[in-house]
Image 1 (cartoon, rainbow, N blue to C red):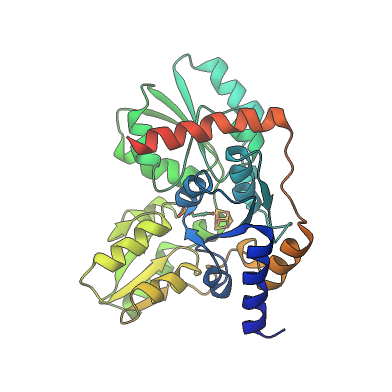
Image 2 (image 1 turned 90 degrees about the vertical axis):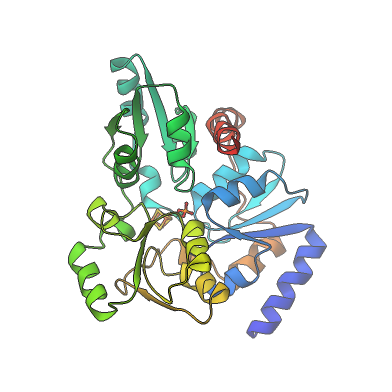
Length: 305
Ligand code: 13P
Ligand code: SF4
């Protein structure tokens, strides 16, 4: 099948199966192109609660499918790339959460949504990069155990000096491996470009950024900016939407390695396959759904205020 046939087939299947397609900004451009809902992790979590179709095809990594399932237990959530994992989602442990709870009386366990359902189930509230600062600032607790991402935790902790952050060692290696030296080189090559950084990057990069934000916040910043050139320190998939919203502007990545292998496993072919067969469904037992749902719903509630 050529590209046009694949797109037509997906449209046909969506109608036949009463399905919608949701995609994160990090998947391939042609997958973003067929999405009914395209956005960052927060947008996708929120949008999943508003959909009245039977089937959600989640073009992203597994934790995103699990989040959608926890919020919509009665729906079929299909993950086109069944093996698509986010390594960071596994970089904290239930044991460490329980230890911290034993040690501190007044602690909130804040779970970045990039985590397994088992970790969410042990946490008090979920956050995404778009709402972490807002939500943590509203928590009454002095002590914040932030899992799994040490870089996002560091970024938020600097903005909330009255809180006592307990850090976890996880990180996203795609963002974490971008170095200050590489950023300096990119700035030398593009001296007029503004540096836009995702908070999953190391803090020495966030510290020198012109703007730090989630993928959707970076896109909004570019749309509203009067500048014309931007160095983007996040996964390169976001450039697809940046070029859509601001085709006259120039975008550069810091390195050629800003590619998330899990996100890039999603393709038009595996979307067609899962829709045809209703395969690769997210399966979670009811107890896990009920527990993981609580911090997810708390996030949605606190993010609104
Ligand atoms: P946002 O979608 O919150 O920008 O986070 C990026 C990410 O790593 C998703 O996996
Ligand atoms: Fe996980 Fe990083 Fe990929 Fe996001 S970009 S899904 S945090 S590995």
